[in-house]
Length: 90
Image 1 (tube, helix red, strand yellow):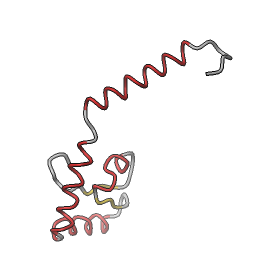
Image 2: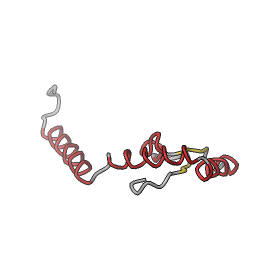
Image 3: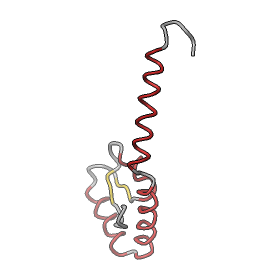
Image 4: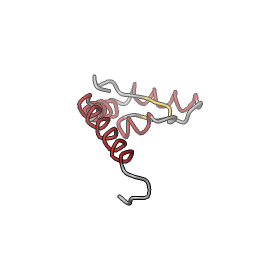
């Protein structure tokens, strides 16, 4: 996605949340739906261009800096909750 390749992806696990509306999703295990999605990406130039642009925009949201900041935030919250004495409201 970051390089502009249109993505066709099964709608399983957590990746549909990652790709959002930038990818064409198909039901897991549905070979006909996969074939149809691949055909759409190959033969529909406007769709391919929209998905390519959307993919770049979506991928730009996932940076190492943002991931690191979110991870640090979660660790800080966990330490804050751990340091709180039992029975004391937040």
